[in-house]
Amino acid sequence: MSPRAGLDTKTIVSAAAQIADEFGIEEVTLAALAAKLGVRSPSLYNHISGLQSLRTQLAVYGLEQLYTVMSDAADGANGSTAVHAMGVAYVDFSRRHPGLYETTLRAPEGQNVELEAISDKILSLIVLVLQVYHLGEEGTIHAVRGLRSILHGFASLEHKGGFGMPLDSNVSLSRLIDTFIAGIGRMNAEGEISKSV
Image (cartoon, rainbow, N blue to C red; front, top):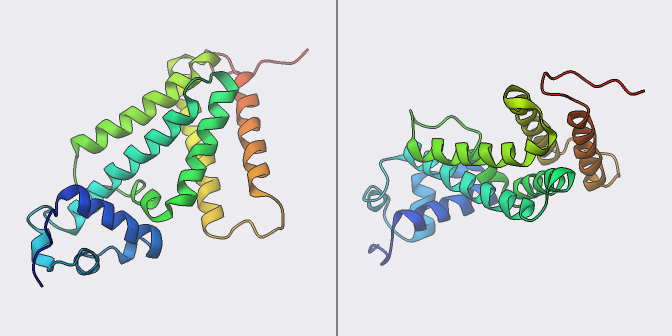
């Protein structure tokens, strides 16, 4: 089998993402990847150092894609509209790319500058969207953690078939995000819930 012309890191990572989405992240092996690309496994080492390195690059690629859909969804919106659009985009990404999404949650090899940079970029995007709620620096970080927990929890349960009742999961997601928005809307910079009169 002769090496395929035009093989590069971007092509390899994209092919690995396709395998992950179609068959699951555990099926992303160098042998499966080589077969998909029509090359011998040793040819891959001209572009990646091994499976762990590939999974780190997949995580970077996945987070870049996730950032793009979240940013596009929030663009031109603000307040609750932006939070809602961003949250729906997050879950939709996990639905369309289940394997790639899973790679973004795994611990990478050591410290990776690219991974840290794109992670910080996503964090900054969410912080920016939440600024309108005036939660203060610490309160905003708590809110970011809360939103991420809600979205990831929903995405994971849905992917594992955890929502068995015949109700529209999109309605459930919308109500969940609305509840989060209502909650942070009643918090002040110290994280205290304002009392309704």
